[in-house]
Length: 332
Ligand code: TYM
Image (cartoon, rainbow, N blue to C red):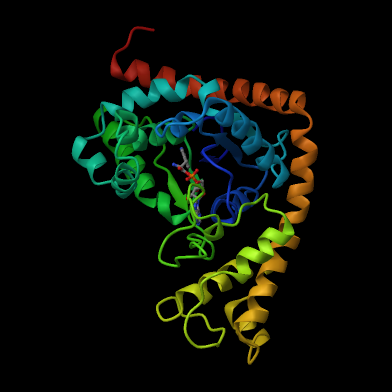
């Protein structure tokens, strides 16, 4: 424990324009934790460079991701918002944990397999050891709870295994973290291929709705969304994966249950339904977008937030690192 508070940690990569998958699966839930908890939300730029980035874009997206955190309701006075590369403890603990992570474990990570297929010309060592850096992010703050989408579950399990292995060798050092995966919204699918997850790097722009898309674009993308045979709005992920994905999105934005949605669109067909989903999404995102615009116009403020966040994070990171160094046998 860092102090007597429970700790929440999560991160988002500044590797593309964020989607409603990132929003509904993760960021929206970041605001759900009570003020009594110590809450860290990180822009994980070290992770982003496992895939080649254009430097100016990476920098811009780092500011933008931080601005989106705030625009989505995370008050920097009450949450520690920071940029990963500005707290050197992540890289330091990352290296240490590499030495307690097995080649076989990393080889089994499905994201590594997917990404190495997608980036066959750049299967670098960082892409491979990414999960141990992610474990370092989490364990550095003695995290109890990690809110993420379902695609991060395997990485979280590895982080738990690494923590337990380290604790087994050196005695209690790390808190073993628990994932917090929302029941509805944990996997928002692509609008063009309901079997695939909605991904910020999807080259097909119609497949993804971005948090910053304007209302017309949002409506257009939902109208073009792939649906299933038949015309009935019914939740059935196996038979009707497209419609069920849209129902999930609608449910997340409106708070309505699947039964309520089925009743609302009984006998009305897909066209009406898709328009309603688009409108609910655009309405819910409008205040976030307005706030985002205001924030990104004030770079000095964002830099101040980064600076304070990095200082606070460093303070806590040092506590864990000095314990780890002592246990391993490094000279302080
Ligand atoms: P990233 O940047 O890919 O995604 C950020 C968060 O959004 C969630 N997410 C989704 N949820 C539902 N449906 C989707 N289609 C969808 N797409 C993305 C992700 O699950 C994630 O919660 N490795 C992480 C970043 C990270 C991290 C950490 C997270 C680095 N260190 C420590 C938690 C704790 C990643 O690449 O997320």
